[in-house]
Image (cartoon, rainbow, N blue to C red; front, top):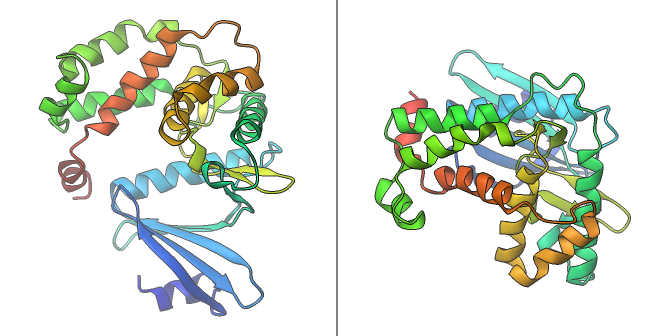
Length: 274
């Protein structure tokens, strides 16, 4: 669908294109601005990207009445002619947490930890259609089935262990992880927007019932990458309730992430976009 017809379909005739970029799964993310300053985002894609957008829509609509500041689904269109999905979202105020210039790192991490505590306080009731650890493991199974992991790079990063070795370990230890809270699913600094008196959450397509360590693990990696590992302790301090960090759980989820890091994305898209 061309931009002009997209604007017409979604009633955005008075909007102009501000920015666009490609998603990792081959979709497009478009940013539009109205004459009155209103900004909206349109995400679109086919194949693997379409499946991700469908999941994001389900999560956002489920979170809408949970007193969590997330983008609102303004419109959704499933184009049966070519399999493309179009997801129109409202914009949130603020800047990505790692880019905040007028707060020191401790205050940023205090806000990030407070925001996560709020997310984890959501009841798991009625969350049966959301993403879970079992879905993560099913994805890994499919990666192995279709030989989509860059094996040499994976083994180099995992002390010689093959993808099959790690997958077997993940299955063996699955029972040690809980489903007691609603996790964000990709809780990194760029996915938390901080404004003067508020904060909001982006990219919640993988949220669902899970173990809080899924979010702790992702945030550890993000803090280390953006601020340095010495700042991780402040995140845990402000989150509270973690007298001792369970390194088994941190490392469990980081092993899951290894499959995403070493995914042959070209082969993946070729296979799942057909």
